Image 1 (tube, rainbow, N blue to C red):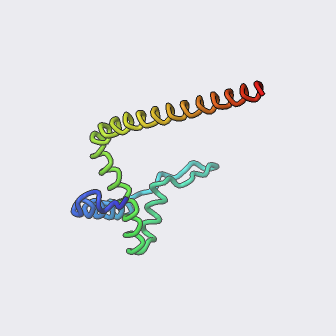
Image 2: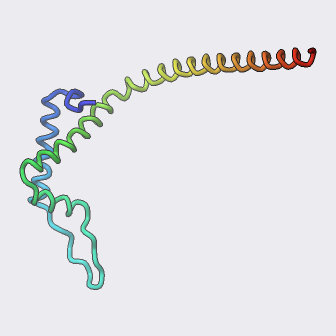
Length: 129
């Protein structure tokens, strides 16, 4: 599934641009948590790590990172927009699938019964001879 084809290009570009701006703003304005009490060590939280990594990235790396995140966002937005339609089609597909499975199960049962009756007939024919 190509994420760029799910939504209009203008929307995809907007999501991408807002992602870059938001991460630039976060990296510029982020202040780490207050000092930890002595004797304890605090692992850096995810936001702090992201801000530090963002500051150290080159422009192409930043663009690539935001592209990956934006593709996921576009996929989620497109999927959520199609959800009501998907539910209706999903019910139809489930009903049709149920019918097909029921029909195949009936054919398999019938074939198995024929095999069993043929085996019984063969056994009785052997006993007679």
